[in-house]
Image (cartoon, rainbow, N blue to C red; front, side):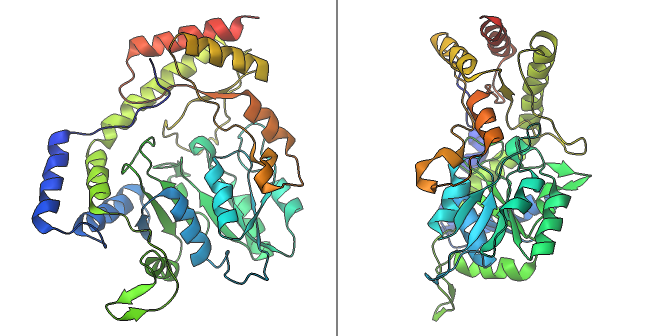
Length: 371
């Protein structure tokens, strides 16, 4: 079986050394030394400030909404946030969970990111924020989105779960908006088994969020506000530090997989497959390799055909979230619906051998070209 992804497992010897230190210190959580070390290393590697580690990417979104005043404890208020339907469900469900109504705006047909012209149409007096997604690590039109936010006094929280290490115009993409969130789930390019982070534009928002992730506790006998438990623990941080140590080789291997896929698609499937259009000033972190086929029927044929050959692909993202009944969306996003029905992600991970890559490519070409 060739799975669609595999978690990156770093040197067991290095991990054991970090774990030995945890046992010696007997400090397992509550902003331990490994969490502090990982915070500093990530800020340096990503070129950002005001980074806060949390226990997972979904809580990162929820904490960001609260810290920036998007969500509210006032049940009489009905805040809204404009977001994309072409994303993992956590982007929208985290809003709903926080009492914020997700309002879906359609995506751009080439970049697959939230289209700024559709954001403006969706703004109402209840709109508090824009929550765009850097889909598959591709940069949104950040200048246009930030301009819309300024004109309408809206917060911008970028879901950058796929955008670890991505640069835009030579600087970290995570610097845009009021906050950007990262997911460090085991399937991600960089992971801490489970985990996530928030990068805030302003230090005061970081300080607010620090209180929130620890129940609102600020001292042995001080509780300043309502909070929740969203802290990263030392074992998660140990894994993150080990993965950081080997990030260069991991990235290199994944980039080669994506390069070979792209070359094969451009040579043999250019008339059968659409690739995502990347902003020409955005770096590619090789997090995913999505392709869009001509029809949903073709997607199902390819998916089922490759499953029979023990090769796993994924319909990522399907379905388009504006069609999910729980969100009760009044707007149907035609482009997102079309793309989501026709998208497939190919296997990408560092240990995928050239022989396995060739098998994926050969099977995809045969099935995509068949009637």
